[in-house]
Image (cartoon, rainbow, N blue to C red; front, side, top):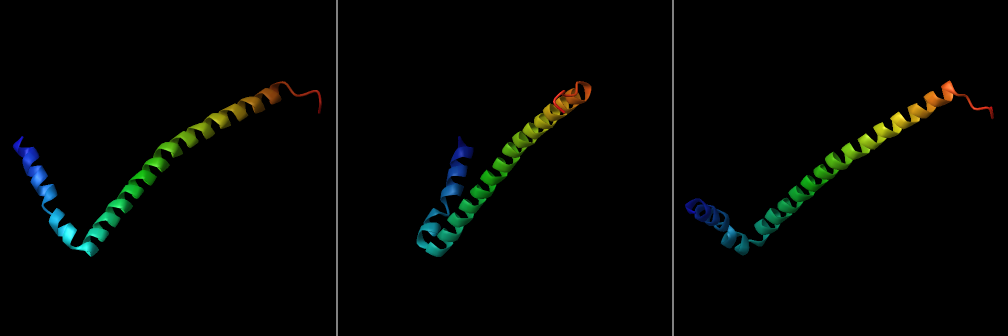
Length: 78
C-alpha cells in the first residue's frame, strides 16, 4: 500500500507545475497525444498487416490449386 501512495505522490507532483505553465502543459499533452497515435498506428499495422498477409497466402494457395486443376483437367472450351 505504501508503494501505491509513493506512486500517487510522484505522478501528482508535477500537476501544479503543468497547471501554471500553459506552454509546457501544451507540449506535454501534445507529446502524449503523438505517442498514443504512434502506438495505435503501430498496433494497426502489425495486427491488420499480419491478417492481410495471411489472406494473401490463402488466396495464393487457392489460385495455385485451381491452376493445377486446370493443368490436370484442361477445359474443353479452349
